Each structure stands twice: as structure tokens, then as C-alpha cells.
Length: 237
Ligand code: TMP
Image (cartoon, rainbow, N blue to C red; front, side, top):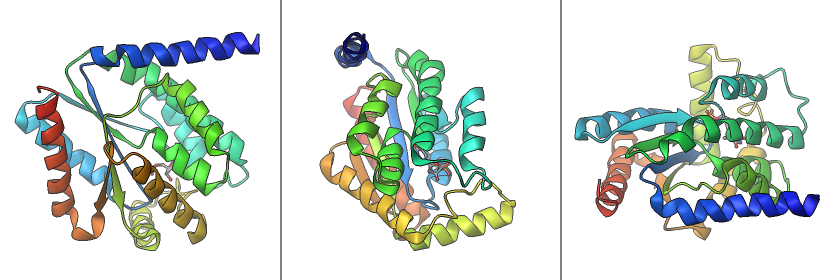
């Protein structure tokens, strides 16, 4: 029975790799530690692509669907300090499976850029490196939840964890945001997440572009724009 399930999941993965060539959509994801400025850049990139006449959809993880947004509220609620790491991982993957089925998959055959604020790399960085769950398990669950879908391009907006954290805490105070369970983690956790992201970027340099956010919002945007323009040209957009 187990062998049969594993075979089916691996077959789904194999199939997704074979049909990747048929995909028209481009999946671009943004990652980074807390307060790295992803959300602002997603907005700017969407405006840029719209002006260029390139169809673009923005979405996020956890979230992007009705159910996913509910899971997001459970995950980020500051009073849920007792969520154990495995539960946390499963909830992210559950939201991801819903997001893939409802939002990403239906877009794959369309000529559209999907800009996603966090994706599966976040589970490797946060639940793998941050919480200490086996990276192999996180990778396997990512593969199951995404059905093997991987971003074409990923931006890792990088800054020292304490700089980002201060920015995120200021923002939360301004917005009176109570969905800050992660921002309340100790700095060591955020340092592990950052190191995790950087090691992912080292492993996959052609997909993951590290952008130093200390250069300021405008420079970050211009750097990302250049990478996107190059990808669009290569894919005949
Ligand atoms: P956001 O604040 O960037 O929207 O992300 C929500 C939080 O969820 C952020 O602290 C990072 C965390 N997260 C994970 O821990 N694992 C994941 O797989 C994802 C997508 C986000």
C-alpha cells in the first residue's frame, strides 16, 4: 500500500517534470527573512509588468486561497505559541497543496507571470533550518504538496536578520498587527533561517538570485527588473 502511494506521488512528480516544457506561465517567487521588503517589491513588480503589457497575477503563501488564508491566520496568530514544529510544517504544506490546486495549476497553461510572495523554499528555510526538521522530510513534503512545481526564478531579498526584524516590528506596531508569531521568535532562530536561505541560494545559483536589500528599495527593484526582463526575453514573452 505504502509502496503504491509513493509510486503514485513519484509518478505525479515525473509527469510534472515531463510536462514542464508545456508550461507557458512563469512562476517567480520572492523570499527572505522577516522585514526584507518582499511585499513592497511584489507590488512594484506587478505595476512594472502591467505597464509592459505582460499579464501578471500576484499571490502569496501561506494564503492565496480562502482556506489557505484561514490556515495563515492559525499559523501566524501570536497566541498559538504551542504549535509544535511538525504541525507547523504540515499546516504550511496543507495551505500549499490548496494553493497549487486552486491558483497555480490552473494558470500554468496561460501566458502569465505568477508573482508569489514566498513558496516552498520558505519551508526549507523556516521549518528545516529554523525549526530543525529533517531537510529531507521537508523536501519530500514540498514535492508532494507542489506536485513537483518549482519556480523559474526566485529572489532572495537578503539583509541581516536583526535589521529586517526591527523593520518588521515597526511595521507591525504601525498596523497593530497581531499575526506576528514568527517575529516574536528569538534572533538565533532568524539567523538560522537566513543561513538556510543563503545555503539554498548557493545550491541553486541559476534559479535563486540573492539581492542585498541594504542597497535600498529602488536599487533592489532595478536589479530584480533586470533579471525578470532577461527571463521574459529568454521565454519569448
Ligand atoms: P509573510 O509574513 O512573509 O507573509 O510570511 C508569513 C510567515 O510564514 C513568515 O514568518 C514566514 C513563515 N513561513 C514559514 O515558516 N514557512 C513557509 O513555508 C512559508 C510559506 C512561510
